[in-house]
Length: 417
Ligand code: SF4
Ligand code: SF4
Image (cartoon, rainbow, N blue to C red; front, side):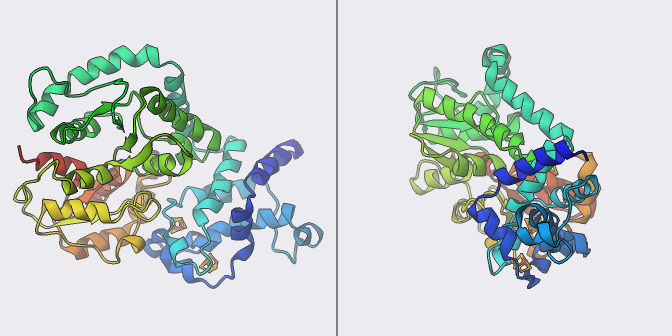
C-alpha cells in the first residue's frame, strides 16, 4: 500500500471517530463475555469469530495512528500498521459479522462491534476492496432516484398485472384502486421491496383496513447500508424522504426489510411523518378492530424469528407477538427470548452476496437451527426479506422441515372477509 492510499484511508478512519466510537475503541476490558454471544463463533468456534477479536483488527490500527503510545512504542501498545494484509483481515472480520449486535447486549460496557465494523467497511470501500456487487446495487438504486421518469411507466404497467391478485385476497368495490400510487395527501406511504410478494399481501391488508395509502416508486432496501457507505446510504434514504414530503403523507410504512426499517427509523432525522414497520401497522389495525383474522387458518404450531434489525436494534418486539396472538392459538416462543435471539446468519449484506456466502452462512448459523428445532414449530414466521431467504436456505440445508413464511403474508391470507 502506498503512502497516499494509507493517508486517504486514515482520513476516512478519522471521519468515524465520534465520541461513541472512541469509547468503543478504548474501553474493552477483555473480559471475554462476548465470546459466546456471537452465533458465528458458537457455530464455528474459532478465534477470528470472537466479537472482540474482530474489533481488535480495527482497534490496533486505531492505536497505531491515533494514540500516542502506539505511535511512539508500537510494540507495547499492541498497534498494527494499515497494510494490504491488514485490509484482508478487516474484510474477513467485517464480512463474517452480520451486524446483529447480540454481542453488545452481553458486553458489560455495551461495546457495539457492528459500529466498529463500520470502520472496517469504510476502509474497504476507500481501498476499492469492498464486495463490488453491493456497490453496484447501491449505485443502481441511486440512479433510479435520479431518473424516476424513465422507469415510471414500466413500474405502473407491472402494478396493473398485480391488481387481480390483490382483489383475490380482499374484494373491493367497483371504482376503488387496488394499488394506489402517487396519491398526494394519502395518510400512509408504503415502501415495498421489488417483487409481488412484498406488494400484494400488503395492499390487501391496507385495503381491508380502509387505509388511505399510496405505494412508493422506490424499493425499501438500502444497499448503501449493507456495504457500509454512509454517503450512498443517505442518498438512497433521501429518495424516500423526498417522496414522502412531496406526497404530504403522515406515516411512512416500511415493508418486511430489517435494514430498510432501521435506516429509515434511525437515520431519517426529524420529519413531518412518522416511521413504522409493517408489523406495527398490522398490530395497530388489529387493536383498532380495522381488520379481523381467522384463527383457524393456520393450525400447525408457529414460531417467530425476530429480525435483529427490527427487534433487538429497532425495538419492535411486542407487535409481532400481538399479531400472532390474533392469528393462532399455537404460538411457540423461541428460547432465548427476543433481546437475546440468535441472528439468522444472513444480515450485514451476506444474503445479498448470494452463493458466494452460502457455505459460510450455513455453517455459521447452526445455533439458529437448533433454536428453531427446539421450538417444535412447523411454521417459521419472520418479518424480514433477508431473514426469510436465509431461513429458507437453512431449512433446505439442514432439512428442518418447516414452512418459512412472511408474517404479513400470513395476515393477508387470514383476513376475515
Ligand atoms: S454483531 Fe453479531 S455477528 Fe457481529 S460480532 Fe457481534 S454477535 Fe457476532
Ligand atoms: S464483552 Fe465487551 S468488554 Fe468484554 S471482551 Fe467483549 S467487547 Fe470487550
